[in-house]
Image 1: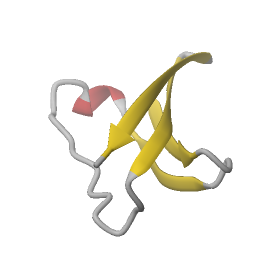
Image 2 (image 1 turned 120 degrees about the horizontal axis):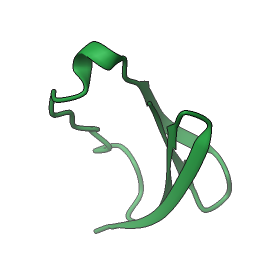
Image 3 (image 1 turned 180 degrees about the vertical axis):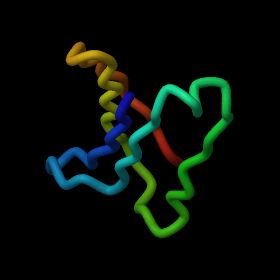
Image 4 (image 1 turned 135 degrees about the vertical axis):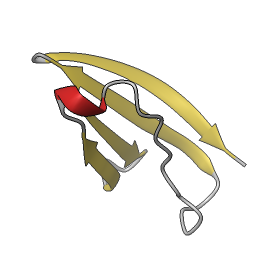
Length: 57
């Protein structure tokens, strides 16, 4: 599984890959230096991409 976070201009602000052994391990992204606003989160599992919006205040 891979997670990518983009700003609204299409710039990648974070990326992380997970392997089978880590499936049940919680994870956090620290985006403290990022501007408030809307971000796009892509979650890629076995080649299937799911996209969600996230708003940071």
